[in-house]
Structures are given as structure tokens and as C-alpha cells.
Image (cartoon, rainbow, N blue to C red; front, side, top):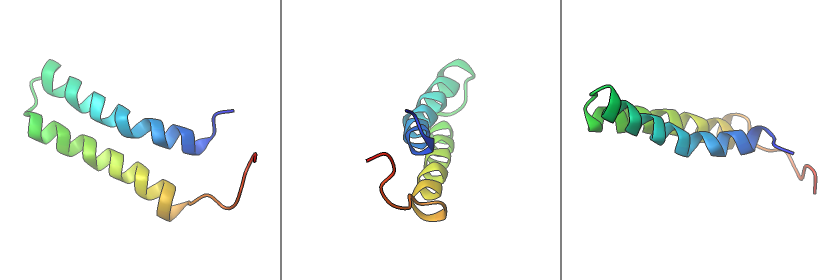
Amino acid sequence: MIDRYDLLLGLIPAAFLVAFLASRLLGFPFEAAVLGGAAIASLALLDGVFFRPPTGLQGA
């Protein structure tokens, strides 16, 4: 079963993939696109670790 934390982990590489595609297809500067991808990935990481962390063993 896919839960919230699986989606957050999947969002991290997806953010960098979208940033790469935006830099190639839309002509954004690569550094700016990667910075945007890193911002989205870090928000997902902060949300999953600090703002709404897992609370115990679920499904174990």
C-alpha cells in the first residue's frame, strides 16, 4: 500500500526531473531550474521529517 511518506520520497527525484525538463524544454537557466527543484525537494523532506513526522510503526 502506498502511503503519504512513499509519495513524499517519490516527490524528491520527481522535482529534479521536472527541473531538468524545464531547463531543457522551456529554456530556463539550468542553475535556476535546479534551485527550484531543490526548493521543492527540501520542502517535501522538511514536511516528512520535521513538520509531520511518522508516529510509530505503521503496518509493521
